[in-house]
Length: 223
Image 1 (cartoon, one colour):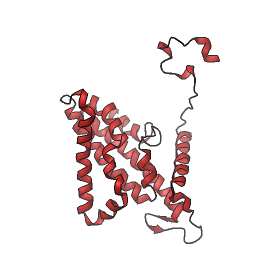
Image 2 (cartoon, helix red, strand yellow; image 1 turned 120 degrees about the vertical axis):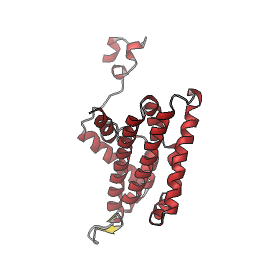
Image 3 (tube, one colour; image 1 turned 120 degrees about the horizontal axis):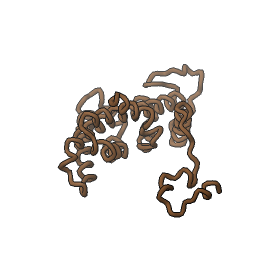
Image 4 (tube, one colour; image 1 turned 90 degrees about the vertical axis):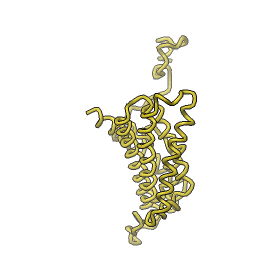
């Protein structure tokens, strides 16, 4: 039951893109098509899963003072492997060219480092693998949904196949950064509505440090 909860957290409750708002750069940059979003998500999930496992295995021997440089080396190794495989597999070379610079930038993806620091460095390898799968799946789904919506509205196609049949003129703005930001906001709002995520207001009453804050009094929360 615990493993299922950890896996589902990454898809719904702690979705890295739609809830935690991490990895927004590749989310907005590569999701002009559904295929690009799916490819980027799977590549990142591969690096995330194996980095989680290796970091969990080495957590007791990595000095805390140099943990981030060590994490970068580990993640970069897996990203290099992914890049190499995309180049030598003929039917995946198009994805390598399409992702371009954003493929090697997986090595500094904030989602991977957040999970390495917050989860893998504190848990055993197996549950770290489950966490990587959950977070990677959530990231992939978010990019695929974004890519699907932008490709259909912006190009009238899906996964390269024409679906509008000339009935709906493509709205080119969805292939541009402005359209990406707009669609991203719509999807985040829809996910928040479906999950009934409470809206937190700014103020002392919602501050996590209010119990230890010397300037906080019960009366200030009502001002």
